[in-house]
Image 1 (cartoon, rainbow, N blue to C red):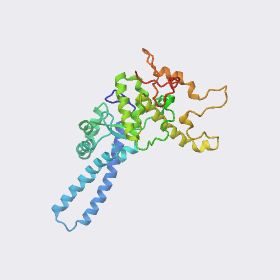
Image 2 (cartoon, rainbow, N blue to C red):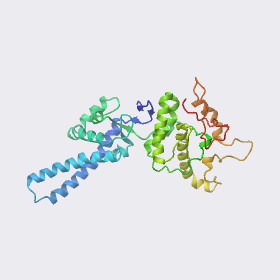
Image 3 (tube, helix red, strand yellow):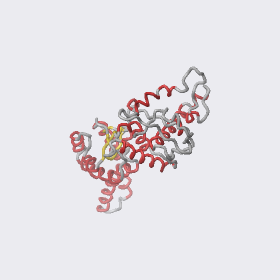
Image 4 (cartoon, rainbow, N blue to C red):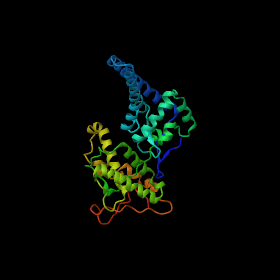
Amino acid sequence: MSELVTGEAVALELRPAKLPSRALAVLLDLVVAMVVYIVVTVVLVAATASLDEAAQVALSIATFLLVLVGAPIAVETLSHGRSLGKLAFGLRVVRDDGGPIRFRHALVRGAIGVVEILMTFGVVACIASLVSARGRRLGDVFAGTLVVRERIPVGRAGVVPPPPPELAGRFGELDLSAVPDGLWLAVRQYLTRMRQLDPQVSWGMAQRLAADLSARTGAHPPQGVHPAAFLAAVVHERQAREARQAFAGRAAGAGAYPAGAYEAGACQPQASGRPRNPADQAQPAQSAQFASPAQPAAPFEASPDRATGSGSGSGSTGFVPPA
């Protein structure tokens, strides 16, 4: 039940899969592979009836290797660790550091899987998974991989801190379609745990994540702004877009806010006796969450082209980067 920890000491929410779910996923994959193998074999036997016995034996071996060995390797490589059975049960193969697998990982897993799954009917794989603390079979041990659960209950998710006000609405026109789900997950988990990291480790990881996000969106962190603030601003922009899509139909008949209201912070009641935004009431608690107990955290430095000159209100969002 231990969480997966990356090389930067960030505990990911992905947890190792249990043996029953892995066994069911492998069983579903084997059923599909065997059906395809039988169909291909029948077609080849009918098409190669005129060949001699040696040629038919060679074709049979080639069919076995391609369908039962090569096809699963290709599927895991192209889907980054998701086969049909794993997709059905919410599982995925990842590296030991939590990253996506490559061809060499899938090749080692598939080659050793022939022995421990096909030739021994899964007995060796089950014994190895029961002995391993993280449920890994021999193919995972030699390939340096791990099967994890992708579907995590929503209640376990942490709260992503809001971005500073000078970045609100700045990325409204940003194209986020090229950002993969794995990068979104890494950014979100960093933002929810950055206060638990060493300041130098947190700064380096924020820079790497900001560089990866910039390479896929074309937007760079403004000069003078902490990379964690840039990450938070882009994540909140994505959440705002998802919220608008989810509530577009309901908001149309109930006095919807204009486009861009979520980014600009304009969704607020007009009555003077009420707070502008329910999130404002949670700001003191958020500030206490991200402030270091030993050293008071300083507010963000605004970007030169966005700063107002006084910098007032930059720390009112509760988002404080690591020192």
